[in-house]
Image (cartoon, rainbow, N blue to C red; front, side):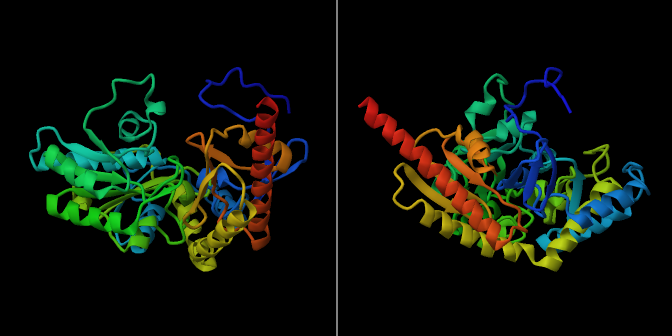
Amino acid sequence: MQTSTRHLMQAYSRQSVSFTHGLGAHLWDEHGHEYLDAIAGVAVTNLGHAHPEIARVIADQAGLLLHTSNMFTIAWQERLGEQLCSLSNMETAFFCNSGAEANETALKLARLHGNCKQVVQPQVLVMENSFHGRTFATLAATGNPSVHRGFEPLMPGFVRVPYDDIDAIRHAAKRSPGIVAVLVEPVQGEGGVRIASPEYLRALRVLCDENDWIFMMDEVQTGMGRTGTWFGYQHAGVLPDVITLAKGLGNGFPIGACLARGRAAELFSPGHHGSTFGGNPLACRVGCTVIDVMQRDQLPERASVAGRRLLTSLQAALVGVPGIVAIRGHGLMIGIELDRPCNELVQRALADENLLISVTRDRTIRLLPALVCTDAEIEQIAIRTGRLVRQWVNALVELSAMNG
């Protein structure tokens, strides 16, 4: 099928390949070429492409009921809220359509908390190098100047400090008495797969309790088993007041959620917030099915085992390669940081290795394979990625020698 992007707003830098279908960790383009998917739609298709149970549920529910609105009771929404709260130790859920919307919900909870405390100018503590979305509030919360460019002035109400630095937060608390909440990612995915230490997250919990702040965890990319537990904060043994989810919750079907407990769970009253499509029967039934499959197949545990295998294999494949700054991982969330920009490797991976990867923060190759990847597929991702990086670095070294 001949297509053109001329009628689409140029909001994305797209690769030229167009996929027609997929199965598990594999995709096929319009010419019949097969690819190994190592990014899962940026941590979305955790169960792989065209999962038969998800496809069956979508077809069945589409023939029954798609939408009634939140003016009425939605049984699948209540069931999904119960499942998520049970897994997370939260108490209430609000459903929306994306991670950015989930984070907007959390930020509104923070503002309400501040106003209830009669804080004149409530502020949310956020981190450098973070990513929380592209709406105006989540853009202002995001700690990446490149995504701010052109949209200034940013929304006020945020205090930014270095990531994984508890002393910086203590200093901020002294400087900014208006802080009412903290928003943090357990792993900064868009920020180059940077992992917060358990000690940092535990200290954050203590500071929030001492200062009457709401502790909010952005689990949009890390949640739903990606790091080897259902939620990233569980590695540290802490319990936040608010968590946000999306991505893997729908395995490709749009859905987001904001979960809360304690005082944060009681802040909203009718009229404070809403979403026309949020929590519709189809999205929530898909979310319930995703959880059922993950529990039955023990996929968070699988992500932990497969992640260790991938990290070890990548370290072996890239040993001795110059320019490797670090190879980091948490479950099936892997970052290979180089000492120079490497965005061109996304296209090279497609063309040379039939492999889907992403590059974030210009210098970090990010791998986010489906949680259902077999051992053989994990090994192939390591082999192809290692070969790709080694050949690229060697070519750069040769070119430098010729020009030197």
